[in-house]
Structures are given as structure tokens and as C-alpha cells.
Length: 349
Image (cartoon, rainbow, N blue to C red; front, side, top):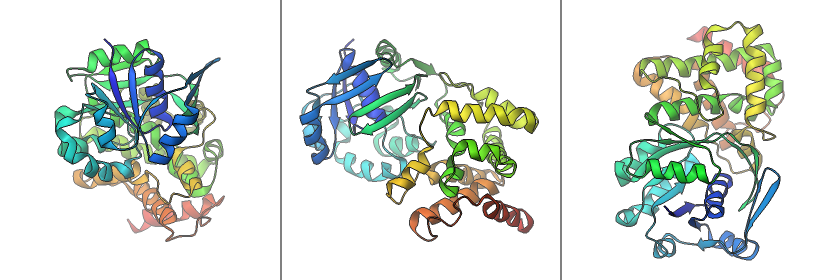
């Protein structure tokens, strides 16, 4: 089956998945801002995958949702926006709800699918995740740094055929019977050294080499695992990502064994990329997804009566820096200052 796909944006994930499907023979329309669409119409898309460089010289482009839908009808849409852009995009999409295809939600966090389903209908949403490491050079220009794969929630009428098409396109897709288990397990991997890296302006390896910061990282994950356990959400392995081993190491292994394991997992999992919160802070956009990751752990913890002080500390601290309430260098290369705030919270709690 040949799919017609709408890709919301030509960022790292949109270009990688959408471009791979184009190379495999599917038709993909990329919806981008007018200035970006104009640039892509001139230079096309570039995907560096392994030893091969693929160029899509004349991609199908749209600069408005109306323009995009005129190129339909589509079988599915790739939705990989930053989580802080979800609600605004939903408002844009609502008038066109009847014409929208099922949305493959590849976003980080565990709440975006709920927002999309609440606004557009459960039949319009397919939960998904990507574990491959993708480097973005520019809009429509990516490098696959490490192939792992992607997960798709089973159960939707097109899930199986879509997974087959993605696998044939080299994306290594795997179906998951529980979207909730898939998304929470992915969030565990997203938490690792993410907030600390952005707050402290430190590399993940430096964070794991610091004994105090390592304890902070471990407790961050233990809080998330407690929240999962209370909801009876099982940890599942993701394509190329042994999340169950990560959870076992965090909960059961002594630091001498778990520390090198987690350090290698973080450094190997992201390829050459710094964590996403760090990249967002350096971009100057004034926002990160911390409230959709650490903040989600806090919100679910409150509902369930489970304390999540580390996730709350990291969420509030990074949000304050991103918003300008705290200077950007408030904790730069100063782990002890952050750890003191953690200890103060433990004493007051």
C-alpha cells in the first residue's frame, strides 16, 4: 500500500520519517511556515543515512493547513511538534477536524495524545515514539546518528499497515499493544541528564561523573517509576533501547554498577547530540519541554499522592531560567548550588 502522508513540519523527526517514506515511494506533503517552505522549495530535503546521502529535490510543500488539505486526502499525519506548541496547533486544526487524517503523535511526554484526542477524537490519534538519534542541520536537512527504530500503538485500523510501511522505509517500526506503556517508558529515557544539563550547562558525562548529581538523577527516575507503578504501567523495552534494564539498574543495582551503565546509555543513546533541554535553552527560544516531562511526573504524582520533589525542583528551576525569572547562568557549572536546593527541600519536606 502506498500512503499519502501529511508531515507537520520539516524538523528533525518530520524530515527523517517523512523523507524516509518519500524515498520508499510514498507521497508526503510537508507543512511549514511560508519562509521555510520557500527555502525548501529551492534547496529540497537532504537525509544523510549511514553512508548514503539522499536528496529530495522537489518535495511536496504547503505553507498553510488549507493549502495542505487541498493536496489530500491523507492517510495519516506525522506530528512531532514541541509539546509547548501543541495547544496552539490544536486551535489551528479544530476548524478542519473533519478533514484531518489520523495523527501519528511522535511528541515527547505522556499528555499530548490526551490533548489531541480530547479535541479531535480518539480515532484521530495514534501514539508513537522515535528512539533513533537524529541530528538536525537545518530545516529539511538531517543526519541519522544512530538507528534504533520507532514505536507505534497497535489497535488503530491503519497501525499495522503503517508500521509495515515504516519498516520497509528503513525506520524499524514496532507495534505496542499499550500506548501508555510505550510513552511512559520513552519518557524515562528522556529524563536522563536532560534538565540537569540545561540548568548546569554541563554535558551528560560530566553529570554522571559527579556523585551528588548522579544521586539526583537516580532519584528523579525512581520518582517517575513510583508514579508508573501506582498506575500499574509496566516498563517496556523500545526499539534498540533496553528500558527495562535501565529501570532495573535504577531500582536495584548499587551505584558502582549502575553508574557506568547509565552513563553509557545516555552517551550512546543521543549520538553526538546534547540533551534536548540544553539545545532549546541555547536556541534562545525561552521555552523547553521540561514541564511536559518532569512536570508531568509532578502532576501525576500529586494526583496519586506520591511525592516527586526532585522532578519538582528540576521543573521549577529550569522553567525559572527559561522564562528569565532567574539569570541563565544561575547554576552554570555549580552542581553544589543545585544539590543544596535539593537538600533544603528534603529538610523542609
